Each structure stands twice: as C-alpha cells, then as structure tokens.
Image 1: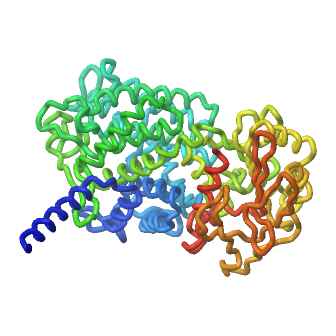
Image 2: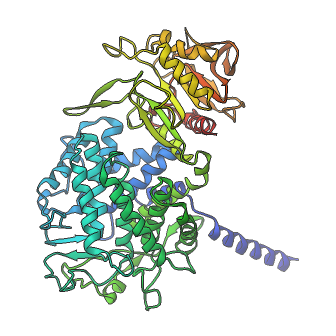
Length: 631
C-alpha cells in the first residue's frame, strides 16, 4: 500500500510539474518577478552601482503598459522609484553625459515623460529636456541620420531607432514641436533605404556611411547579417512612435508602409516548428544558431500591436498566436512556480574594443543568459499586448468620441504651451481620462476628440459620444453652453443608433441648467441635490455598491463623490440607487441608448490606483462601463 501511495504521489508531482510548465505566464506575474529581481536599484552583474541604462527603460515601459491595464499602483511606484535613483531634484541625471552622444541614453526619457505627465513634478521635464537637447547637436550622417554613438561615427544601427525616436516623438507631442515629426519620419525612411535587403525584405543590423568599418561591406556599408533583436528594436520603434504622430502627418503613412513591408519579411523567417525566431533569423539550419527570446518577444509585440492599432492587416494574427505560444513553451521555465525567461543573448554589437566584426561566429560567441533585462522588458510588453488580443472584437474598431467643446478647459502643459487637460484622453495626471481611455482600447475601440459643436456630420463616424462636466463661467470666461441646436443633433444621432454617455458633476462644478436641455430629451434631469460629499480622505463617504444590473456586475465597491442626483421620466430607468436617490440611469432612445451619472468618477485620480484604497474597484467599473457602451 505504501509503495502504491508513493507511486501515486510521484505521478501527481510529475503531472503537477508538467502542468505548471505549460501554464501561461501572465504579464502581471512576470512583472512581480522583475520587481523581485531588482527591488531597490538596477544592478547588473559586474556593477558597483546602478547605471543609467537603456534596458531598464524597456522594463519600465512594460510595467507602464501593465499598470494601465490593471491599475496596480505598485507598478507605477516602482517606475518612479527606479527613475528617482538617477534624477536629482534639480532635474540633472546621475550618470548621464551628453557629450558621449550615445543614443541609447535617450530611451529612459520615455519613463521621465510619463512621470512628468502623471505627477506634474518639473524635475522630470527638466531631465527629459536634457535628453531632448542632446538631439539638437547629436552627430548625424550626411543626409541627417543620427549616429548610433559618437564613438561609432557615421553609423546607424536598427537598435538606435528604438532608443531615440519614440522618446523624440513623445517629447515633440507634449511640447508641440510639429516639425520634429519630419525628422523622425526621415530616420525610419533612411534606415530602411540603406539597410533593407531587396531579396528578403529584411534589414541588416547596421550601416556605415563611411564604409570604413571592418564589418561594413565596401560597396553598401552594411553589416553581414540579419540579427533578430535588431529587427525587434526596429519593429517596436515603429509601432511605438506612431502613438505620438499627428493624425494627418504624411510621415504616419510612410512609417505604416515600412511596417507592413517589415512584417511580411520577418514572418517569412519565423520558425515554422517553434513559432519563434532564431538569433540570426535567416539561418535556421546553420549550427550553432539558436532560438532567441528577446527578438521573439519584440517581434510578437510589434505584430500584435500593429494589428490592434490597425497598422497591419489581421492576416498576421496567426503569426502572432504561434509566436506567443512558442515564447511561452520555448523560453519560460518555472522553478517552485516562479517564472524565469531563458534564451536571451546578453549583448550583440558592431565594432568597439574588443572588436566585434559582425560575423556569424561573433554572434554565436555572445553569452545567452537567464532573465536578461532586455528580454524581460520585451516579454512584459509582449505579454501585456497579447492579453489585449482576446477582447478586441468587442468594439472591432468603433470610434469613441470625447467632447472637448462643452468641456474645453486648458492649462499650461509645458512652459509656453497650453492644451486641453480636464477629462481628456491625453491627460495622464489626476483630472485626465487617459486610464479610462485605455479600457476602451482594451476592447478594440479607437479614441477621438470633438473640439467643435456636435452636428449630424461630425457625429456620423462615432459609435460612442461622451460629454463630461460642461464648463460654466467659473471655469472659463466664455464657456460653450449646450443649446437646443446641439441637443437636437445629438438626440438625432442617438435615435439612429449612437450610444451617449453623460457625466455631470455637482452644481458648483458643472453647468447643469444647459446640460439638462440635452439630458431632458431622454427623460433625465441632473439635480442641484449633491450626494456623497466626502470630507478629506474619508473614502467610505463616497461608497457606492455596483450591484448586479445591465451595466455593472459583481457587487464591488465604487467611489463617487459630490454627485448630482437624478430625477427620471420615461424612457429613463435607474441603474444604481443609493438611499432612494438615483445616481446612475439609462434610457433606450430609438435605435440608440444613453447612460447618465452625476459625477465624472472614472478620471485618473480614481482609476489608476494612485489615490483610492485598493478595496475600491473603479477600474472594474471603467472596464464594465466601456464594454457596455461598446456592445
């Protein structure tokens, strides 16, 4: 009997171990692993102190992606703590030397811009501006391409496009540097024109304009091989830089065209058996070439995000699914249920001392290690992106249009430049709707703004239209007030099948009287009776239970403060009632529907986890409301 039990126990242990190996590692799980590996500072093997390194920035971008998906504030706190290791109170950066003209040093600037936008702390903008200023004098090729480093004259590497251009574009968007996007576009155009192989469509790792390097072909100036991670850097650079491009800038279409050629080329060399990519991507049969983790994660991220954003056709979806399954099977291993990422080459470069000649033998000699930060960062981005894939068909590209006409407050975003800030998609600080917008994108929606009065024509493309906290005289001198013309146009749009979200505020902060011209068409009136008047941080005074209803499901705690209560007539019906007072209501109107709430309670302050105690689940409310609006 004891032997039988021992054999049974052994069988169950083996089965459990096998099951554990096959269990998908989530983005959040790997994020926790990363924070456990580097709890205090970013020290790598051989370091005496933490250094300003680009690979840390890759990890932190992955954590940012996950944070906006799940609202786990620990991720944001980790990002801030990590950057505060380097950024002093005066905005100077410990370990950064502009005179090195190393484009790698710009990558962490993305994290500085996030911190500035979220916290408003000027030291982060000062630090980011130091990095931006490097580009003003950074050495360039004769046509204008940024050198990879000062010590690598006249050389452009694929890696450098990721290190420099998304940061450059993000800074330019915030600062209003419209002309910068011409320069950014050219970096991608020039890199492709010099590095792309006409036969395969793949891009070589590096290009030496001077043709002086030992690794450079004397006719083309190109390095000898297609290195996987270099292709990954280039692909990620394209899908990330497009986040910041003006909608009508011609460079946008140029980069999307390059991305499509790139996607066709890299999927042609995707390993058919494993679904991932080799270190030298076009030589699968040459020993000792190997399947490489960071390149595979980067390329899956590129393809998945490209599809989600509409840059790439859905025909690449099968490649994405095979690639991600291969990453989980090939590179993820668990020890005592703790995940680790194997199979990342620690570094591969060109030139330098000792000299790297770009040969196949050189690439094969570089160490392949466990939990390399570049690989982990790429995995975080890839996993977070893949976790968005199953929900994309809810909206399938529907447009969610946010009013910036009735609510049109502006403030100085950076010195000398004003922009919209209050309940807007772009605003990442407390009063913005950036986190709410991410929930719509989770379900496959496209976000847009309406800066003029609504009409039949400009509402036509929208599936969802949101109006939040209309201005009154206290907010601006000449507010745009709701009137019968606008209200009739909106009502006609709803009647034809549109979905309308009305989010008011208490009467002291919102123009309710004119807003009710619109709300009244659906049997709803915002009242001057204010509910949940929270004093200081006594959060329980703002408690609302979601309940199980047509919009929200689960009986979880939500936080709403200073709410204008509602009175209803047909066709309006209550959704959430507290102590006999209606807080949220819906109305069916023709082919469309309306939902109204007397508080804009899903702004960043109460969604991104930085303010509310964890027991309040406004982020779940944001997800469920977004899904209801889009269905």
